[in-house]
Image 1: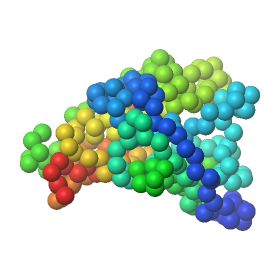
Image 2 (image 1 turned 180 degrees about the horizontal axis):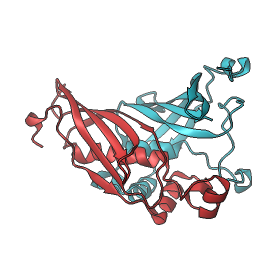
Image 3 (image 1 turned 90 degrees about the horizontal axis):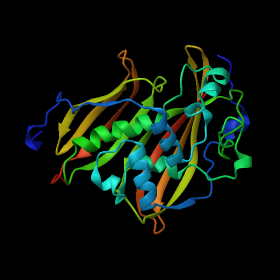
Length: 152
Length: 136
């Protein structure tokens, strides 16, 4: 199998972005809960955020003119240059240290943990593994996510 | 399900989802995702070759967490959760979230979770660990 991962891409393993800060807003939780078909009152009322609400916290709010023709945001700074351009979600693993509540102010530090290649049924695949550490401003861990994205 | 009666093999109550364009619109607005494959049908079909609008992968993950949240009782805590997307899900699909207990030990319950389409194909699968109320 041809190695599609360049030395430069391998050197980017371990790179972190500066922490991003966001406030967990009650109204945002309520909208998310309705949109996902949530049944639990604590989420519908916006008192507490369901775990995957954190996905929305990682989506940058960019000016319209910066979005790509397909509606996507530009690749984030941690994504190295790869010969395979189509990026798909591969799934996530979450360690939950405590619940997330309306009014929480969280910091997220994202790190590129690993890049590796596999042969898929329809061709080579490159797996990118990121870690998102969500914590309070005081440093209390809230959620640690290990997110896989797949380039094909 | 009585707490003291939980044992491996027990099934969680299933839940059916029928994602439509309104729900996909609201979800993608809520997560601030403008990727056109979720709301622009001609684009999804003609430019990206999909048969219909795609259901977001993380939304499928959320549905698996809901299976757990709906099963949990007061004082239970979700300790970990994982999921992966295996196949595409489309508007018009009938998706069923299902799960079962795979292990119980010292007040911790491990669950296996899956989301299947109307043909029985698993499109997302995952797992979760829950600490029962009162367990150390």
